[in-house]
Length: 234
Image 1 (spheres, rainbow, N blue to C red):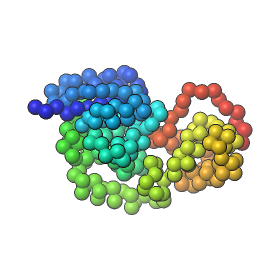
Image 2 (tube, rainbow, N blue to C red):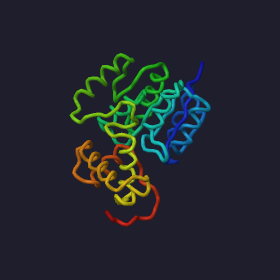
Image 3 (tube, rainbow, N blue to C red):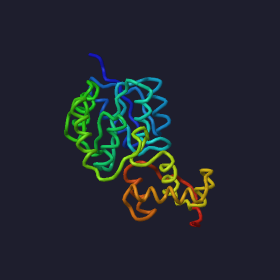
Image 4 (tube, rainbow, N blue to C red):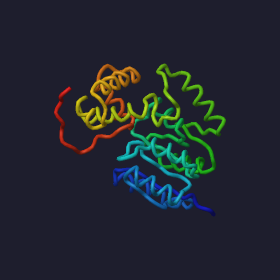
């Protein structure tokens, strides 16, 4: 019996080990690697090209969506399953659009996750409880995308609806950086930062910077890092 080669990526050691222990009970699964960060995960995937990568959406350095997009861009054979603590419709759509094969809440039953892995390894897709083929997932995406009111930017961008630069600004916002600090950090003008922040608020449909930060953090787009609190100068 040919085994399904799997890597598990999560920055919480206890959760990661629990998933690995659960997979180890399955005779058709083989754990070939594990990682705690996005950069390490991408390195392992590129080196080993496992059949399936089970990734937390919210990872240090590179998040699950970014890794998925890079795997697809590199034309690697690995299928990506994204796990998240926040089962959000828009996040599901974003993840499937960048190339994930499945998206599931972290509280999924082990038996269900095992079934998802086996289906994904065979070329199917899983969204919630739906098992879909390629045509099915394309139809699902078309229906869900059309139902969203917010505009989307260039589909080549790693996140929707924000551009790459807007994501960089948003990540700085979540760290509590002021517009002046963001301008210095990114090497752009203060006015450009203000323009980006205004665009971010409009695209996300939120009223202020705090709401924008919460929106991004809940969806796993960015993370909070250990650092000193910057001055709140605008």
